[in-house]
Image 1 (tube, rainbow, N blue to C red):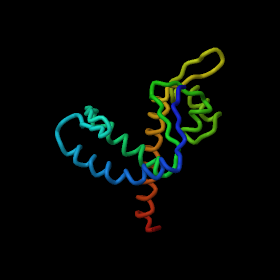
Image 2: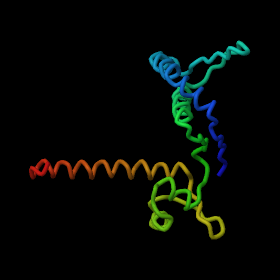
Image 3: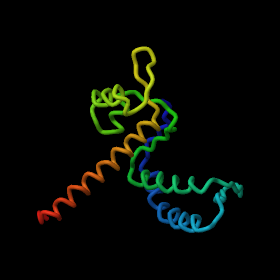
Image 4: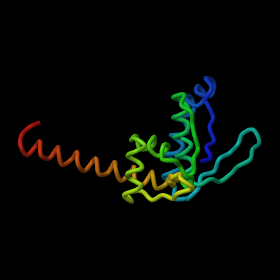
Length: 150
């Protein structure tokens, strides 16, 4: 899996922190307009580029993370991950991930004796798992109300 990683310096953290509000405010205006792109102007060169609107939302998220001093990683969803990496993403044990793979809950392929999983499949399972958890919590909440246990 290719990961581009950059540890955030104190100066970068400060710059990101001072930029978040302005970029977030601009992004709200950008998403109100009907165009599928935004235009960014580089003051150093005067060059202007068009980028997909979603890039602006991504930029806001990155700045927020940087302002917190967190390391920012860029990973494409077609990358493959190991069972250990998948376990870390799902916050479960590696043997549990292996069980999910072997039961067909998450597709995978074998490379020699190693299992490889597409990151997008791990993310899809994670999203599904969160949705199921919310539904089950709602059921418990409904039962609490029904029996007056609140």
